[in-house]
Length: 126
Image 1 (tube, rainbow, N blue to C red):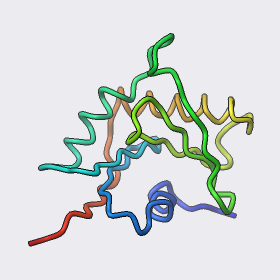
Image 2 (image 1 turned 90 degrees about the vertical axis):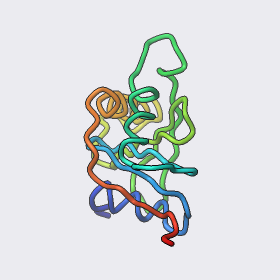
Image 3 (image 1 turned 90 degrees about the horizontal axis):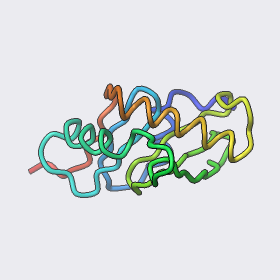
Image 4 (image 1 turned 135 degrees about the horizontal axis):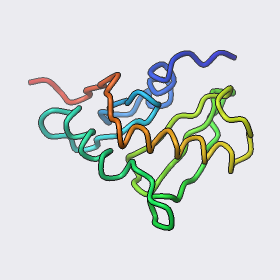
């Protein structure tokens, strides 16, 4: 199955969720359960702090969740609201370790070179 773009995958994964989110160039999605002000700025600040990997620290830790329908994986890190998508064709090694290292590297790139590609604002409009 072709999962589509990372934006398509995140829309599918987060469908039905009332949470606003921001997607970055390399697949990292920052969830904003209590957003205030400009979403892209808030997400970028969070990602600059929790995205970069620092060996031997919690920032190097990760977990791997397999998505249904062969969409790929979501790699978690040391902040619950910072998640990185890894597509089915991306990792050279499909093991949890291989997927996790791929996702962690993508999160690091997004954290050090943040470029917003999509903002999903789910706040109610007055």
